[in-house]
Length: 342
Ligand code: CA
Ligand code: CA
Ligand code: CA
Ligand code: CA
Image (tube, rainbow, N blue to C red; front, side):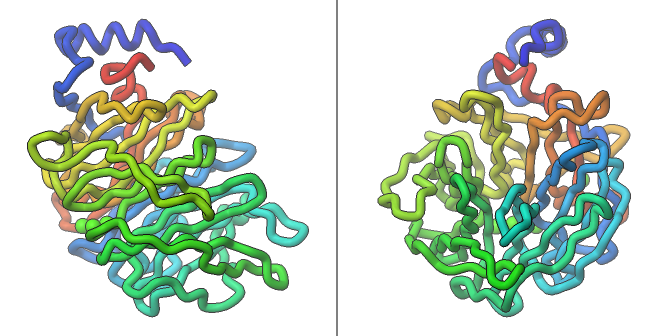
């Protein structure tokens, strides 16, 4: 995927010195309808790409004050509410084998009773429906969540404010979805944002005051880890480290995105090397900018002329002017062309 002319044009527009350490400024291209409740209620989005028609894709966001999940189309129109509790983080995977069916499964941390909320997506109706076989308990005070798929196996990582990480494996139970713990380890202090790379087997976890760690996502892997970036003088992050997401390209290429919440900015890293490539903010324009972002998600799936190279979705912590939060969408080439060799 080469966008040389675009890269050149954007680099020139930025004065030709955009590659390193400089903060790029972009604006949002679309936004979701606002949450029905005022205050800090939105947290984490997940993007679902429709298997046949990418324009029919969905943005699924958590409503952490009791509203469960809110579902939007790519124009930001609200499609469905699943007010099933205080959901904090959400993630999803396609092609999950459940008996005879291959389903798109959405998982969220439900903080009311420390369980896993589980839904499947009906691609025809674009509606989510509950699919949990029972109330699946997680570690206490569950908080962050991300999913991982390895061959036929699908896992959910759940973490909490003590830095405990639990890996659960999904399995079929009479046509529904159940889960069992397969691994437990400690990061050290408060964790939340995480993302797993199904291709490379890497699990990235944000230790909110410390930095981004890369672990091995395999259930039986040792818990050795590598520090990708840190907060403080030697790093490029300003606490809290919040949402993490992967922009995956073929052959292991791509980018890791992180919300550097304390400076209202986002960092981009090379997926293969973990190298820091640059920083950007989403500023006020026709659509208001984004501040204090919690969760984010990104996709490299092409959505026709709308998002030919994919898009980024971020939670906006300071939604103006209504004080009702929402999620913002940004064309990805506006970020990747200036910051990388994309
Ligand atoms: Ca928040
Ligand atoms: Ca947090
Ligand atoms: Ca959060
Ligand atoms: Ca805003």
